[in-house]
Image 1 (tube, rainbow, N blue to C red):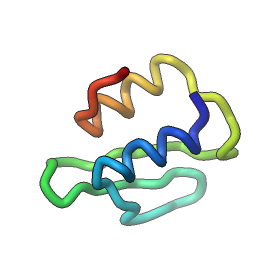
Image 2: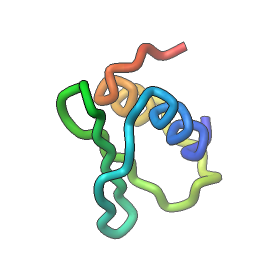
Image 3: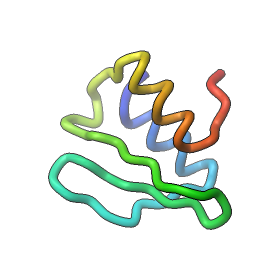
Image 4: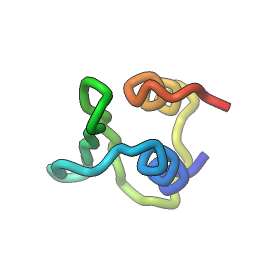
Length: 64
């Protein structure tokens, strides 16, 4: 899965970008606790399976 697709998926769930420092973006949700951090070097890069699992877990989204 591409980083661009992951960002679309979490934004569709209601997450929005609150800050960026270097290549790391952090997203916050109005109702869910915590932040989701995504390291972005290129939006077209494929993301590792473990990293994808971690992002989805942070976002409290079930992987499909």
